Image (tube, rainbow, N blue to C red; front, top):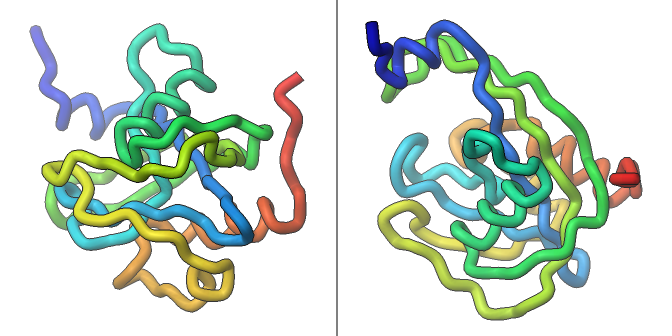
Length: 155
């Protein structure tokens, strides 16, 4: 019997890889155009089957921002449970592996079908955002950890 994606999501956690990208004391967030439309998020997405975790985070950053990035280290691994997701009408359980990164390039470019906007924010601006603005509230913790240099080396 072949299970569809929604059935699988109800059954098991799925892996998300992403980055908090910093440039000159600002952090890059992307505004979602599909699921959770209009909410700001860090560049992130599902890890592909068999994909290296670090390479997956770099791929997602490139797909969602057009930027090449350099991974500085691991910010953390987060277990995120969203009960009765409003659009998908199911519980979602993501294991988020989030890295600290810096840009290598400067030109932001994104697919408007997936991302509505990309914008640099200060830590203070992100701290003031609520559930009606941020896709996941753990983004605030990730940014705080980046600023406080709570970054795990990849070695």
